[in-house]
Length: 378
Image (cartoon, rainbow, N blue to C red; front, side):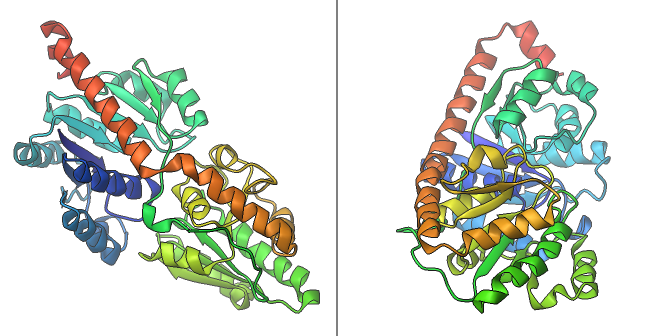
């Protein structure tokens, strides 16, 4: 099967990482796979080195990677021309878009193959009425969490399938963590954006430091993620004097190594889809502290693999981190629970589910009456 995946750009976001990892797995099991970005990283303020590394990774794995080079999200005509040219080379049997922004371009390109759309968040980034347009283009919707699935079923008129996100096998830890370090390292991963609410994490850092000070311990929180709000967050860290406890790492390509070095994973988001970073943390055997929002609460079972706290509450976040880092027996149990919970989020299972979906969509498209096939392709 020839599979074409479309992303916004080659960056370290969850949707993009999933598309990359799925492409690698598709190639391993004998399929031809291409990943197409709508824009170059430099055109939308993303990291060029991350872009180059992701494209190289896909190509070295045997896949294909290219960008349409669109300067504007509304460059639909230019995008359709560029996409048609790309599709003449890749000749896909199915197109899987990991961004709704690609749908107008796909509609104008008229590819005449099944189109799949994955919605990667619990919130809609477009008005619900847009589904009237989407339903004329999309053959199947993929949801990455139960909340995403509920949202799609409420608004779409095409089949919806829940397929959980997955982590790359390189994150796998052989055994649970047993010991707590004197000066613990806490890791957060994700694009610096309003959604991730890192200002609350910065506020919690000083509270955590105060809580662990009587034990003679100095925690360090590292935030791995780039994005247009990175400088703004650094200014906040500097202005509040939090630099002693918080380090901004920017976009990183070695998150697996960072997780191996960390003692605890933290997520301070105001909303989520189903963050791959949580799956990566669990796969790494890291106990997790996260906000009680959709996606997070589908991954974390309190007392088993982590702790959930109210979003936007720096005191609750700091208290939960302090508790997780102060009881070695409980810490070891959470690490074991994290590894156990990660078992159902393998990239192998995720890829198998996607391939079955593609086959079903192709079969239904091929068996549809000619009039319906023509309507579906414009």
